[in-house]
Image 1 (cartoon, rainbow, N blue to C red):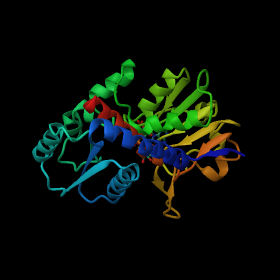
Image 2: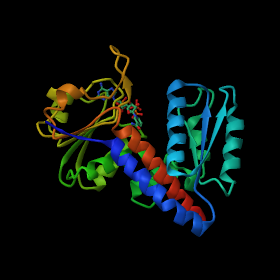
Image 3: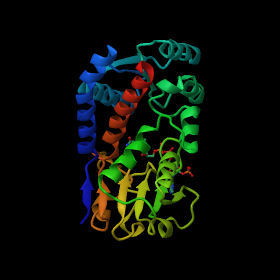
Length: 284
Ligand code: NAP
């Protein structure tokens, strides 16, 4: 039976630590960190993520401005809004909730955010810093995944890691972070042949596919640590589920995360940390 690693509990302790730190920071620098979140449109998933981020800001005690705009906003209007936030000395972090409507070029929008306010770590400067091992803002989900693995005391150095997924926001950056911690990393994707023969060699398996219950027991090595990043709806129950067939994989694994309550809360906790990090860049 696997030990279930609670991302929810770890996230709560990270947020509590930040909350505790806050009064000293406020006394020293005369203000609190401030996160500005831009939400375009009414996509239910995005609305719920933005709500979660606002709630986390309240829990930690930092300032949060959520700016909601209709889908009809033009790219130029959105870029102007970002420019204003870039130049606002009281805003430390800017997050534009993705995906954006099709008439807006997301890359242009991300590139417009000042790298030192890019709390998501998506700006090319921050991405380059990650790949060059230079100081920068790390993307929240990959950072949260590594924190969960380390918190559980799972050794990374020398281990075989398989990451299923090669997106810019999860698969690629988490692979780089784990490589930097001296794992031997294999990145699998939709064109990978005989996926199960690769995943079943992994001591640590990270699933970032976006397909409900995709990782089956026969794809997992006995005693592996399994990290489920997926956020999907189970087509049968319509309930939230991950990429891992938890019920059947759990007995085979040594450690496993759950959905919900795993990587999702850690992503938000790391967003709070990143906001503090950006704040310190601005006030110091
Ligand atoms: P994405 O951009 O759609 O990437 C999915 C990756 O999975 C792609 O690299 C794709 O391969 C690969 N893939 C798809 N089908 C596959 C198959 N049959 N076999 C092997 N690989 C396959 O998704 P993402 O943004 O990385 O997100 C992945 C999941 O994590 C989603 O469920 C998302 O909701 C979730 N997520 C959760 C959090 C959180 O905070 N918990 C944050 C971000 C994302 P190709 O590159 O070849 O297409």
